[in-house]
Length: 335
Image 1 (spheres, rainbow, N blue to C red):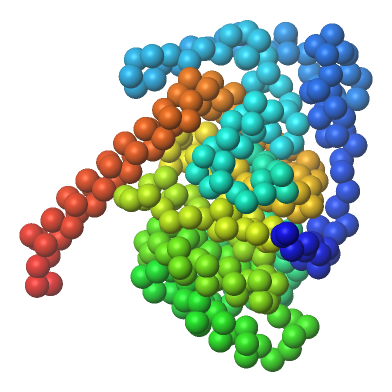
Image 2: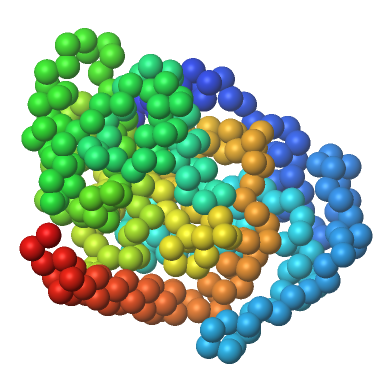
């Protein structure tokens, strides 16, 4: 049986205080109501007044996806905060296809305005100002910029060609002077880590996860480069999460469009709920139009078509790597 974590101990003071937004909860209820329902609660504008009617988008293979008047009306209207229901269901199937979580019933998904919005909300969910967080060294500058501005105590953990060094991590935690201030959160980019490019091996992930269990850490698995790997990535932290201590962030920016600003996070339900409460009163939800366009494309492709698309992307970047390496050897040899 999986361990039962006390999620309250991981919440920041702000997150612990968050309650559902009544108006956003009403929007979610309205989304599940019959089409004939007229809501006086959520302030949704009349979609018939929007100037857009329908759209046809031509793909690079010259096939099309169609947003008819019904789909366009949904694409231009407010959504429940977690995301468009059909898209969430498709993304759940995607997570099962690639990660096969041990007990997926304990998790929920939320679509975000790019993975960086999701990541910033996860940081705010779990950290109070001045509290420590364990991160890769070197670490993605965008994450560091947020954490520095937030006032977190950034604890750098050495990395090597297999990612975060588990022995170094264990030494930091075993020698921590005050058990009352022990870090509760570990942040890592396990595949194609930015800026080193290192990918964490399966054995290293198992070692890191065991340490997380020993010291009761939550793991933030930020994995925007998962589908860009030149070989099949090793199993994710989400796939080995027996305890419900992993929050995973994924991105469509590298495989569909950076400008659509579509990311999604997968989190244990008690943490997911607090994240949703935060999003309800900030961005409300990710772009309805971007979600609808993505849904129509993903439904057209299916999981097999999406996989084929990501393999083409991976192969393109692998070829680019070979060209770059050859150019360096030819033109920079001896420098």
